[in-house]
Image 1 (cartoon, helix red, strand yellow):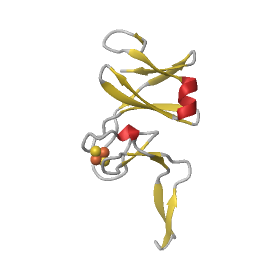
Image 2 (cartoon, protein in one colour):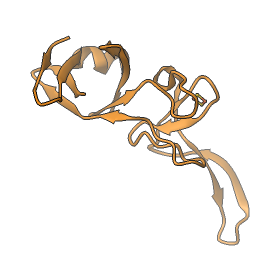
Image 3 (spheres, helix red, strand yellow):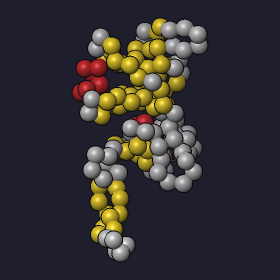
Image 4 (tube, protein in one colour):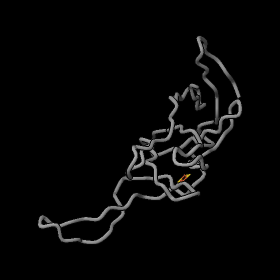
Length: 129
Ligand code: FES
C-alpha cells in the first residue's frame, strides 16, 4: 500500500482500478482497518467493513438490488419488486441492507456505514483515511 498526505490525513493506494473493475468489490486492510471498495458503474465507493448494527463484516455480504412494495393511489399493494438502479450490501450477520452508494440503512435507527473519500489517479484507487 502506498501512503501519502499529511496533517493527520493519509491517502492510501488500495487497489488497481483494473482489478476492481473485474471483481466489482475488494476488501482490503489498511493499518488494521478493513475497508470494502465497490465499483458501481463508473463510480467507486469505500466503506468500513464494520456494520453499525453489531460489528459484522458488512462489506463481505451479498450485493443485491433493494426491494420495495409498490402501491396504487388508494394504497392497494401491487406486490414486492426489485428497485431499478439500486444496489445494497447485505450484512451477513443479521441481513441489514446498506445502500452501496450512500452507506445508509433504510430501516429504523439511522444506521450508516462509515465512508472514506475515494480518488482515482493513474489507474490506482486511493482512499483517504
Ligand atoms: S451486525 Fe450487521 S446486521 Fe447485525
